[in-house]
Amino acid sequence: MEFFISPAIKTLIDLALQEDIPNGDITTMFTTKKDTNVSGYVVAKEELVFCGLPLIRAIFEKITSKNIIITEKNSSDYQKTDLEVKIIQLAEEGELLQKGEIAFRFDGDARAILMAERTILNFLQRLSGIATMTRKYVQELEGTKIKIVDTRKTAPGFRALDKYAVRVGGGYNHRMGLSDGVLIKENHIIAAGSITKAIESVRKNAPHTSKIEVETTTIKEVEEALKSGADIIMLDNMSIEMMREAIVLINKKALIEVSGNVTIERLSKLRELDIDFISTGAITHSIKAADLSMRFEHITK
Image (tube, rainbow, N blue to C red; front, side, top):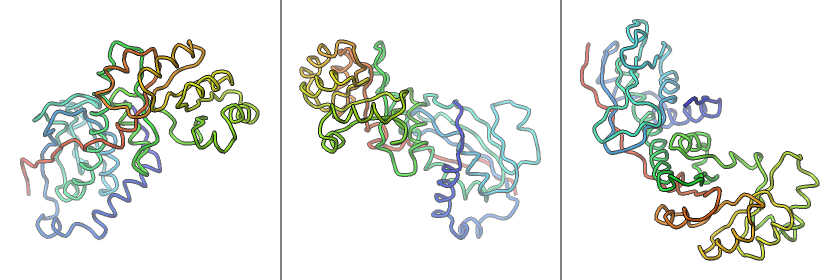
């Protein structure tokens, strides 16, 4: 999957390196001679969906001035000699790895690799954790039309990366930020005076291409949102019985999103509903970092 390393992500990498090696790596400098080369690999220590390969080059490029190359196994590019760090990609982005399977191999300057190790693993472990959790949610909905979508409940500064990992895991993205779409929530409704007034104001002022989504928590609110012409109606924190009633009422006149208290255990019941989307913050804010480890196997001084 293609991924653009934006200036914001480069800044995030800078911040990560600044907090880990603000004045260099004193252990590495005192234990590892200059021009020492090392080969090794990064291995999955549990079953996981691998994610984060595009970041590896970007992190190394912040540490070394020489070229970095990532190639597939047996590629002739790997034989080039003017590289400080060479990486052989063994796992595809989004590939399910079993415990003990190797994601990629590397060889090159030991100092550069040691300084980059923790930053690389921190990014890979978070993104792989999100992709792994997302894959589990997606698998629970296989055979239905329902799409799993994320929310804005992401780690500050990590939103583009967190949402990229959701896509790698097979999920879909909701809004990247508040500028990307209209979602009228409870506090907007209170501020506007009603769902009707909020929708009317958006219709009057927003571009005609903007779809309007409204968060509802009661059948009365669903009725008002439908009557006011909402394009997407979110059923938030409703019981299964209430959602069934709302779905009949909407009758395909708007897209339906379910949100609130979406656990993986609850998906077995939600998958039976005639809905379009299930949004959950759990796939980004409640994940466990995947367990990956970097190991050296050969050193040439």
